[in-house]
Image: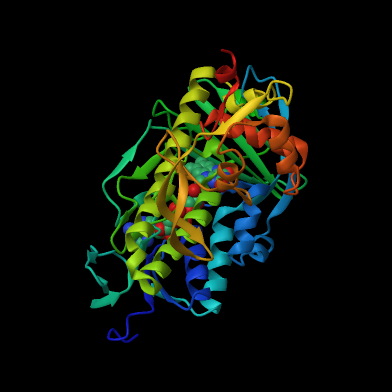
Length: 436
Ligand SMILES: Cc1cc2nc3c(=O)[nH]c(=O)nc-3n(C[C@H](O)[C@H](O)[C@H](O)COP(=O)(O)OP(=O)(O)OC[C@H]3O[C@@H](n4cnc5c(N)ncnc54)[C@H](O)[C@@H]3O)c2cc1C
């Protein structure tokens, strides 16, 4: 590893899922990732990945790793949050052991050319204008950028903040023919979940009062409908939301749990590990290929992580306030109907220039600024600025529905889109202007 030719070298601390994902993406962009591993085994445990995260595995060419790691498809999720009365939440999930997933993904990136260096202790990072410096194997090395993928340790991304103090104790058992479908239930002093693979089961018990359990008691077994099998404690993991105050600073980016660790109840940790990895790789590419856009790239990344954090904290707070696993917006959606739409609407969004993810780079573009500080340009593949063109002056909703139906959207999709924009002041109700 020559230090003089560092332009393509990116140093990544950690060898978890987020580290493997960013290494994979960087390899495909022509960089050489150097991963620093402290060589300690990680606590495993079955985790559930929502089907909606599959697109990210595809984008990172990691889909087949799910199979290598023994992942299986499972239909639905049992929600016994309220009074242990169970309802099945629809949806498909992949259940996979997190340690096997990280291992399989890491094997792939090594095979593709990433370099792994053993490193018992990570030394501090020196972030300079054109490069970062760090000691690797006792030698000072320069890299174009540094990625902190050290999970909740967030070694290069301190200070960090946290919300609440929940700790998860994770148990497992070999259990051929066990229940695959996940289940979540409230228990005194916290909550618990169960997730299955064809030959194993994992149980997580999350407590907020510092209680450390060595065993799963009968009450938890009953709440989770567990078979009578001996469960072994795998270990304890923090389960509270935690985030780096500065997820990006110059040429140093935090990804995955190092940037933002979710409460596991959200089931979003692996999805975020992949999406932040994809975004961080685009930022690195922008720093190298389009340095004039570096401020947009930094702003993009920091808004991405901060936006996810705000959403997560508000859903966690509303969960504890309303004691329900359905979000208020999900409930409200059911009342969105075509008949209740105003008859005349007008575009009322405010735009600003910002960095957006386009073709693997962060590029400056106009986007709509939302009241909560976030920005948005596309909903799926729909460009929201189309609405500015279509209703810069007030138009009848019937006309707008008709115009949007030509954009290959169903009527139901158009109705939800209009409600979504009305809620966020991108469109406004113009009926009142016609009253007088
Ligand atoms: C109880 C529980 C259940 C969960 N269930 C789900 C679920 O069902 N679905 C889901 O999507 N997510 C779930 N999550 C979240 C998910 O596990 C994490 O979000 C995800 O594993 C984060 O991956 P990562 O690569 O960022 O971090 P990690 O997997 O923690 O990897 C961090 C890496 O950094 C290395 N490292 C740490 N410190 C140092 C150091 N000092 N020097 C060098 N290397 C270091 C570690 O060895 C490791 O390689 C759950 C979390 C918990 C706590």
